[in-house]
Figure 1 (cartoon, rainbow, N blue to C red):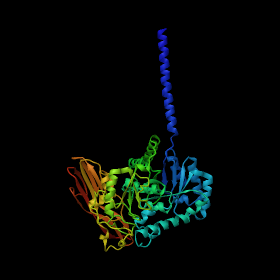
Figure 2 (figure 1 turned 180 degrees about the horizontal axis):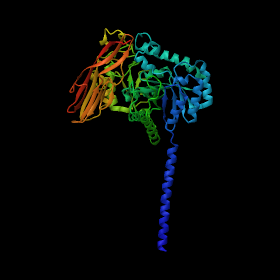
Figure 3 (figure 1 turned 90 degrees about the vertical axis):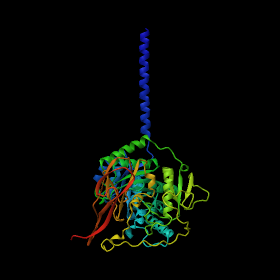
Length: 541
């Protein structure tokens, strides 16, 4: 009898243990399934005009994204194709955004139809593109908001905001009186002024080797002070194949944006000619992995008071890509630039993800505007890590800086040295405005730099251990006695005109190794520099 009771008790205990495991697993699975990500994740399809190709891409990503940007004008400018694509996206359970770089005009009725047909699945318009970046880089006058030389920084800010607002009002905003929809864009500079012009969300571009955390601080700070949303657009690392970074790098970029609070995270998909996809399986895998990370790691609410903010001078439209970047595209860096870069170097090192960057617009004296602390650009107590403090000046109103000289056309090679030579360390600094923040503590710092390559080329220049790097160089920390390989491109074709073809040719390599292709064994901190010169050759007819 005792054995029978013991057996029954054992069976009961096993049953209860099984029931506990079953219920626990079931409840956990239910909770996991109920988690709705608080971030929009998706693809910006910016190539071709094929509805079938759009459907293929939607089929690929619909299980691990929740929004899709129809970024190809071959579809967005054709109502029949657009309607079919939108319906397919919604049928797959995704929201969508429509890219448009022209005014709605006669197509304004489409907005009402879209809202009635697809409701909240239609988020709005991606209106125009990179207006701030184009201004800094002085793209052709028909592509930028400020055409003629402004009198000063304040006039530049006023013209940029007013012209952008005029384009948005004429093309989109006036139709929101009937149908509500969002206006978004991507950019790589002047985020604050994009928001001033009326955008509801701006996506800071993670492109080339621009500093991610610095651009997050600029875009998030601008969004917070305007009461708007922000996000990122992961786009090209190179101006030629493979265009995008590796899948692992893309995944790390998405994690960084998510942990910093981005509401939108997009991956740009198009080659240089806008004709085909550049996404590989490793990028789809990165998206899948990120989607799982988001579901398993929901974000906790964070208060602005947990962050600090650095306050820039009013209307200071600096590009923040390094000490040689422009101000509003018309002026060279001024005597404030060194101080600002040094301040940001210190603050990013100290506060990292807890730093925002804002402008001195309508700030109330004594108020931190929700931040834990404000640091002002003219605060002399901030350490000057990378530059001595410049003489104190008054910036209200801004002085009229000298106008940037007009560059010599490529077809007139009599002044090939008109492009500014950048010394090796300057090349590395140009990767980011605050390079010291990125350095990892290892045994020795090996710097690869480039001189002689102008602003007209952005692609890969050299490789280190098989990884491509551009003209802004690379700063690496390696263990003592480790061996590494490098290779500088011998000739880089930049452009081909009717009369001349322009290239950059490797003239010499300086440093511990003087070969175009070589290896070095680390024994101390050092610099390897590839020195290029511009060459103009008669074009072959």
